[in-house]
Amino acid sequence: MLIPHDTRIALDTVVDLVNTAPESRPPRDGLAGGSEDGLADIAALYAFAERHLISGVGALGEKDLTAVRDVRARFAEVFAAPDPRTAADLVNRLVAAAGTTPQLTDHDGYDWHVHYFAPDASIADHLAADCGMALAFIIVAGEQERLRRCEAPDCGHAFVDLSRNRSRRYCSSRTCGNRLHVAAYRARRKEATG
Ligand SMILES: [Zn+2]
Ligand SMILES: [Zn+2]
Image 1 (cartoon, rainbow, N blue to C red):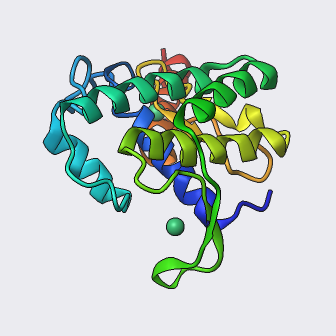
Image 2: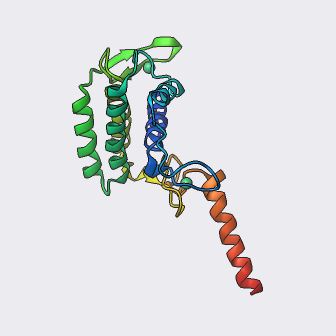
């Protein structure tokens, strides 16, 4: 599946956004998680915007924080959607509410790409429009099932499976994949020796 550069960036952003939600952050291995919200305050929202190079959002306030958390919940629903029609319906509503204005742009040395957020859009509308359209792109490509949740029992991270054969099961092969690998190995050994 060929994914344009900016769509890939928007997908990274939406995955990170969904994974800041407390329900996507189960406690494990001494890492803070569980009830902790990755967007606990305005400072965290600024850090998120900076991490994903979301520019032109201006000064952020409580209203933005609430709105972004709300958009985050809508995106989590898209990742949980059982079929393309459900996902499409959710994306349509999200994007319509954000009021998109597609604009061709080649800012900052990037190749021509489309910004979907309206000029002067709030950060919540910016995320809803750009990330919503990136998810729309995946649905149009017939790849809705690539929007997944990690299968590790104590995880729950959202991820986009961009593997060639759609075989990815874990948010990260380094952490969750490896953890389960080790657990399965130990179980096999125990069976063999026990
Ligand atoms: Zn851009
Ligand atoms: Zn995981």
